[in-house]
Length: 320
Ligand code: DGY
Image 1: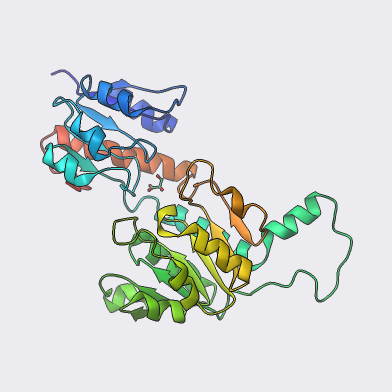
Image 2: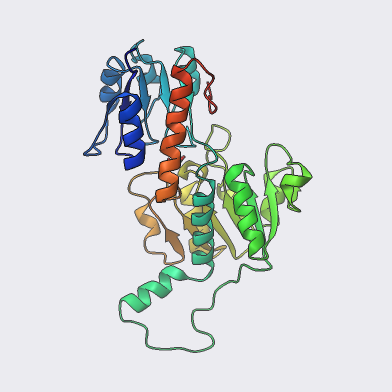
């Protein structure tokens, strides 16, 4: 039987590509070029499956033009805000994602940003690197300690729960807001808040771990920042769209927010140049899941979903 024809839109890990070459009639992208909407539409007539990243947008206008040959979009990401799921479902195109496998890596980056923002890592690194470190005193570079502080987690899914575990390792008191309350076994002593304002008021430090949806876009707006205690620290490793970046800037410039750690921005790639003059904003270029182990695991999980689909089984991570 002919192997299904698969387009992998970006350069993935060597192990992922080797497995895809073995099992599929695969079109790879060794130069890792970005695809346009027209490329996606054109390729949909040439393949049975696409394995994209969050950099390829399947919005309603693209989906409308997709060829009937395309049967499945097997994402190499847990977030699927780049896909219009309703439009894909209406075209009977199966969509999967890669949950679980990036939770450890993403929580590590969230912890790095939390510690870096709290302990002034950008300012300290810049000072030493630029040869400007010429003093030391007990009042020099004093930051906030995370141990003993209350960490608020917005979105207690897989990544949020790993973040809670890491935070407990730093003796933080974990609070969370989630659509549904976790079981006591999964809560592990975390304090549940049934609305966001209640969580914000209790969060010395806040970490965002929910998906970007119509309901959560702009969740951290001016009113939300005002509800945080003065001197709070914000970390975002989920999606840039969760934050109103002008409101974040105002909160930093007024001193209401002591610091922030961001791995995600409204504009990606690129970020927000207005943040660059603030050394109390630690920034990374959306690398939450960028570890060797996790890249293999994400690629394999996407291929597992494709394998199931083409074997007429329900893919484990089928969204629509
Ligand atoms: C994800 O999986 O959603 C990460 O943000 C990388 O795309």
